[in-house]
Image (cartoon, rainbow, N blue to C red; front, side, top):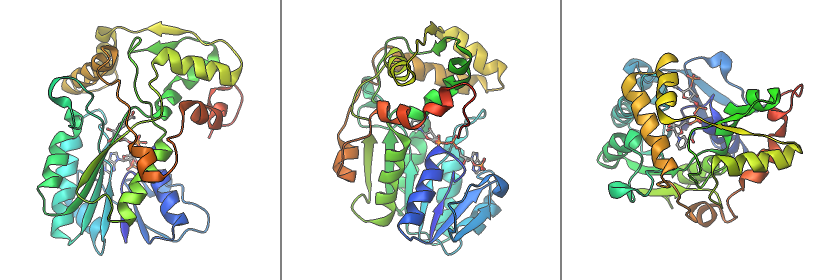
Length: 293
Ligand SMILES: NC(=O)c1ccc[n+]([C@@H]2O[C@H](COP(=O)([O-])OP(=O)(O)OC[C@H]3O[C@@H](n4cnc5c(N)ncnc54)[C@H](OP(=O)(O)O)[C@@H]3O)[C@@H](O)[C@H]2O)c1
């Protein structure tokens, strides 16, 4: 049995779908089972659990061999606490392997070959836990551009938080496919992989590719770091979480996340999907009046 956390989200939802295709026995974890969109005819066990409630995690891991661990930052920034809570439950529950979705650390200073600060404590605890582990460190998701869909649909400029800083934008479907390989084989045990797309792209580059896909002009508007911080705090983010988000945007702005690897191609046996292909498959999200998803 494989426990998929984050099962209602972008990567976890795709992990679920791919595991169903591979015929693996699955348990999907969510705080709100009604939000779960299960593949048709799939026989999936569903568990209602919350990283903030240890008792629910013990129920979630009962009888489980492997866990796909996805801990999202949210407004309170509790990634490390949530990682540690699941690692504790996994050890107590006799789980064998945990595949953790982490994040790229960039190439600045001491960050070489390290995950992002947000995921570092969880990765370190997992590697020291005695459990078999894998850590997947993706670059920026292509799907982050969905946050621009309202602006693009309305003909407004897209907010640019990272200037001309380029990143190895990765398709979350590739991230999920690598996670499935790590869950179903032993080839990625006790190893970390840095997952990027095939090309370095800035926000203006991504906007240009979306514009070409949609056959129209899209403009951008610069949002300076202090304004980003203000917006995050006003939206309810803890100031420390807002600060670390702004630090991340600054790193990208300074070229510190201009990293490409061939890990996706090496693991999946086909080239990493390009942003252009993601944009084509999700064009409806950016067209006024079209239904999406
Ligand atoms: N976006 C990027 O560019 C990027 C790049 C590298 C790494 N990452 C990493 O990718 C992860 C986010 O992946 P995603 O985009 O697939 O996530 P997502 O779509 O935002 O989904 C978040 C998931 O987390 C679950 N969740 C949140 N709080 C929870 C809690 N307290 N207990 C249990 N489940 C909880 C939600 O489930 P319910 O609401 O159903 O409970 C939901 O399924 C983060 O770890 C992030 O650091 C992101």
